[in-house]
Amino acid sequence: MSKEKPFPEYKRKLGPGWWLANSHFTQYMIREWTSFFVAVFSLIYIYELSLFASGARADALNLLKNPGVIAFNVLALLFTLYHAFTWFYLIGKVQPARNPLGSLLRGRFHRRIPTSRADLHSRNRIPPGPLAN
Image (cartoon, rainbow, N blue to C red; front, side, top):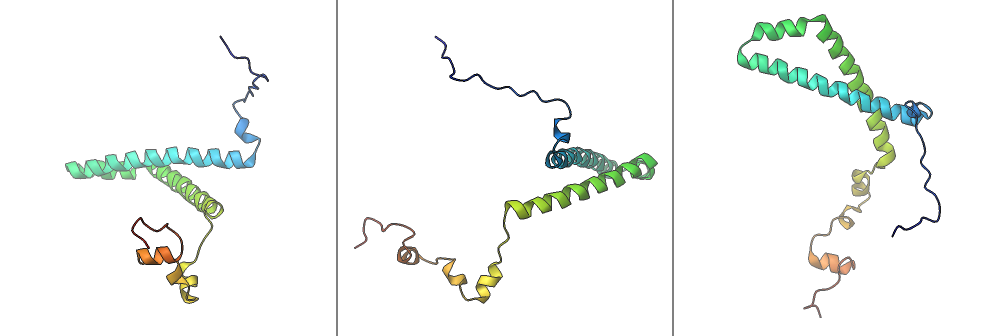
């Protein structure tokens, strides 16, 4: 027996450029695409290291001198910088910054780090155990 839903389910149709309508979605998609170039750069770098390790130093240096590889490295650097800057910009919104040194200078740092079980009991952070009076 099938259950009927009280309301029909709305299925929104998204076109291929749905992310272009909102600038936040556009920045997100560009940031995601940049990670692809970073992954490809990492694979090329690992291949170059394997050439050096196997003793094919001349082949590795010829690969590094290739204009296509140089252009790709510059592009990967730009995409990595874009990815890093936008990510650090988002971190400030996701995780508010705290300054533990400021509380230390104000003399309140000892309140943040309980040092013993009795310290925890005195602040009512944990209930007393079964042997407590």
